[in-house]
Image (cartoon, rainbow, N blue to C red):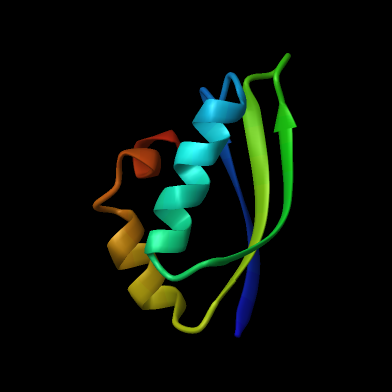
Length: 69
């Protein structure tokens, strides 16, 4: 497993975070720590994946990808 952290902008509320987490899980991520900063409109997510290359390739096809910091 590869462990990493990723952050997203335009994450204004819990619903945005939930959508991102759903996309990441669909791409094979096991979610660990999450932090939503409503004031800064960002979120930070710690996650693990078996294959980082495959994960990134799949994540590029999601709406969440365009909001990566």
